[in-house]
Image 1 (tube, rainbow, N blue to C red):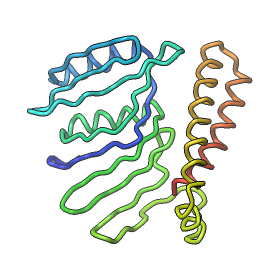
Image 2: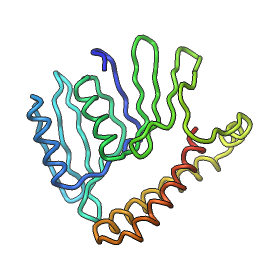
Image 3: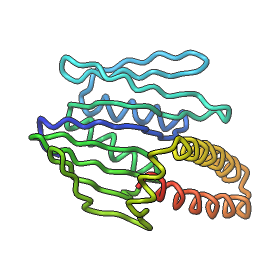
Length: 199
């Protein structure tokens, strides 16, 4: 990653155990970052100082006792951005990553830790560099954007993915391989549907 580049993480969603968060804190301290954290019943907020900036990472506590890092973040520290991108991959998380440099924007759609779409934006032009899976036609995309139905369907689909991830976590925790397998199959179907809608 180049110095001086700005990275924006939109719709970020990563899941962690409490032990994993403790290890993340140790990693950041060993990398030389100054940080502190606060916690209440709903959130653990990890504040990381990068030069004169303070990045606040908000971990929402889930009913399962685990945590979800979600939201939008702008990172201007190359090392911290690289660290966050490794986390997206290792936790099989979701995000839309926008890299801004010299009037160019590179947009990555990441689903389950895997880049499913890569687009380069220069001025008013955009070029799809990589696309995984089926692509909607221009007419289908126009129809979807013209109606609110697309937004509603996308929101419902994301909620369904969240529920299925919770079920998968519980199945893995309980050691129920059959149930975990069914959840994974359903998540693959949902990921294909998400890919078609977000393309």
